[in-house]
Length: 189
Image (cartoon, rainbow, N blue to C red; front, side, top):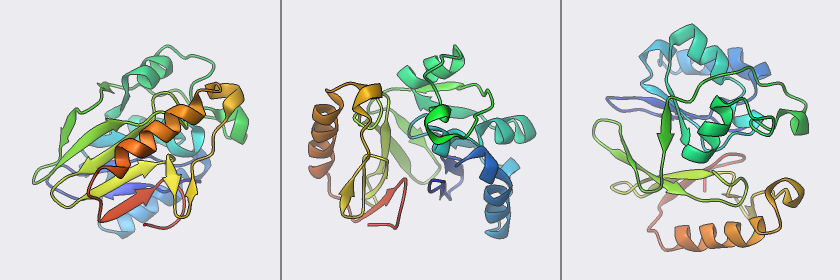
């Protein structure tokens, strides 16, 4: 599955929910860390692939958690577009969920003592986002890059320009002062 990241602040958020088949493990990891899912302010998705959104339905139905995603991908999910959720590529079904907050580039998500800046970073998907916390210089980069690697690109699905979009997104993030980056897969950087 993918990394799930908890923003612990006055308004705690869960970034990505992993595969639906892992949702009970994700829930247990939260509670073992002292975070009750019902205390979360919401879920933020970096992009709509099933390894990042598979648990959305469960958390939304069980705890009434609102879900935020980039405008383009949120609209696709809400209209039940066949391309949304990317479940057939990873053989992991995604139960329907609703995106209540449609995010745009440079929008801020307030968490209490901090703010996460939404950065539209297309490449891996057209509506892929990263989240940047400026005070601590922390980046949540989703699947744009991992430790010693760039994110997987599906040119068939995202088009040949996905390579250029990914490069431009990497150039944009390279200009930021970053002390710590959390990718969608693998260890922190």
